[in-house]
Image 1 (spheres, rainbow, N blue to C red):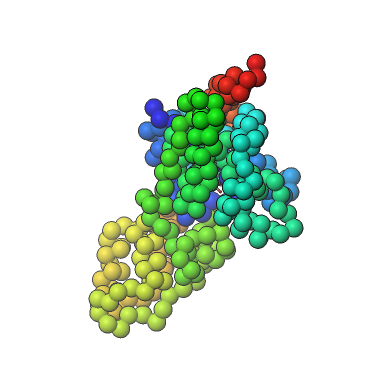
Image 2 (cartoon, rainbow, N blue to C red):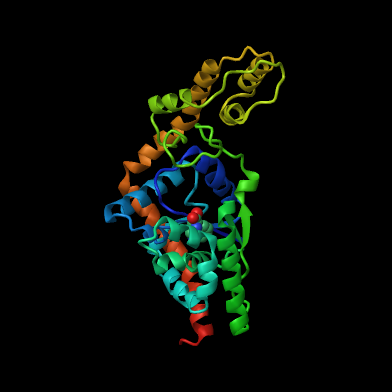
Length: 327
Ligand code: TRP
């Protein structure tokens, strides 16, 4: 079975955009591949989070992963900082990662712009840590969004470089499995295109009904159609995309007809949409709550995941040490 690795930085709660992007592809892949999914808490240190928030956010994401159907019996799910072998590989890879190529990555340049007071070496070597995450399990496929393409290029380059330097074939070159190509793009509610983490624009998996309804009712619309069968402007298309995802075919068709004969009432559409989103997220929210309240179970799952991940990581690191010349 082919090996897959992917990580999520714990930067707050998951929203519907994450669900229909990353998470859904993870849930599918766990049945067909040998999957390692981890919470990238080391990566999150580049922005200096508070110590309390680190444990909490790792736990939160773990609970949310599980609630969405990532199954620890099928996939190996772990917290990055539990697998110290990754750091050793990170060090070795850094010895053959050049300042010039690291400085040129767009994510680095962007981060350096965003936090000019904290342009740290961790930020610079983010791509080497990410490569270590992937290469430690010798993964061949990595489900990521399009924004990670350059980091993936780097991971392939580092794998190739190591192999060439020592004349071995230890690391396969990991291919990106872009879920953004396959997934439905989840629109934001403020008409800004994509669902992101800004409040008002996104619906979290863990969000109470009242707040979901309020956000949906506030979604941006327009003055309404005046010509029958006209094309939908983006903000309206966004609402229909949502309907398509969470509502029944009948509901979708009903509003489609109303749009086409210009009798649509956005208030009705939003009310129905809010209802259907609540129905969709309710069971997920309940499961998140169950896991969150059971820290013992969460810790046990994290521990078992770490053990499984270390088994694979130790094998790679032993090989690497031998190849490099450490006995
Ligand atoms: N860089 C990824 C992101 O920002 C997270 C990540 C870290 C990752 N290590 C990884 C993704 C390894 C895939 C594989 O979303």
